[in-house]
Structure formats: structure tokens, C-alpha cells
Image (cartoon, rainbow, N blue to C red; front, side, top):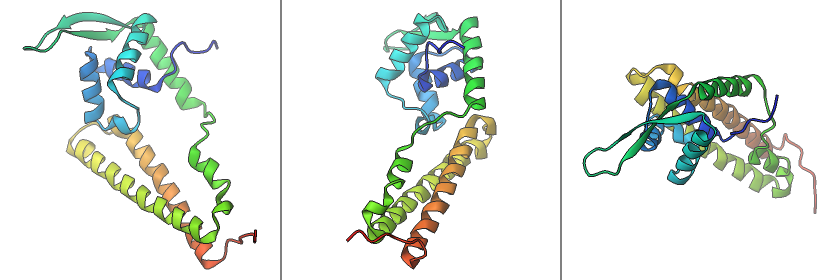
Length: 191
């Protein structure tokens, strides 16, 4: 399979939104934020407009109309092209099926946890656990405010996934910090 012309995950999000209906970029950004997708996709105006431009350049989306509301500037509304719909589905299928190495920073840091010494390592893991617990609470709130109020669960399924991943990481961080504190995780002496 030749390399995909567009690999920016924000493009994936925009293509997903356009399955619902044609939208202008500002509406795309607002809809992503309303659905708490800004925790999944990095959304800023510059990158969003660049991504829309790239999708249009590659003919994955096309302008379908220009609208003006009140004194606001004109806004171009975009929709999928047939090529864009095919590329989106193929890309999505590939991402779901094939795990890829993502090189998370935390895993890199954990590989050198011993350099912190037991006290500092346990403190760091416990602080991370507190941050993860806050994120899990935020995810629960997001789910309550969307799915809990009638939005289809499928629209927020990635929040469920991330919540489960954070919970697994939280459990590991707490257990490892407890092992360090109890002395059951042997620590080499580097004095």
C-alpha cells in the first residue's frame, strides 16, 4: 500500500465530522470542542485551516457553498468528495486494525525510573496518579454531559477507551509506588 498522502489525525477528525453534514471550518472546530474531542485531537485555528486546505488540495473535501451570518466574514462550507470518503474509511480501517509503535514519553521515562531514587520515584508516581485520577474524573464528566444526556455512545467511544487506559496506568502507578515504599521492589544501590 502506498503511503497515505495525509496522515494528520486532525484530518481524520474533520473527515469524520463531514460524514454528518457539510460544515465550515469554524463549525468543525466548535463541534470538536463541544464533543470534548480537543482531548483527542490537537485543535488550534492555524492547524485546522491548514488541514482543511490540505484536504481540499488533495480533493478529499470540496467547497459546496459560501455563507455569511450577520456581520461575520464569509465562511466556506466543505463536504466530502467520493475520494475523501473512500480515503477516510480506508485510513480508519487501517488505524483500527494495525497497532503501531507510538513511543510514549512516559514509557521512556519509566525505563529510567531507577535514576530518581526510591523516594523521588515513589513521589513522582503518586503525583502522576493524582493527575490521572483528575483526568478520569474529567472523562466521567464529559461522558455524563454527552452520553448521559442522550448523545450516542459511539460519538464518545474514544473517551471510554482513554478512560480505561488512564485507569490501567493509574492502577500501575499506585501499585508500583506502593511496592517502592514497602521495599518489595528491589532498588539497586548506586552510592
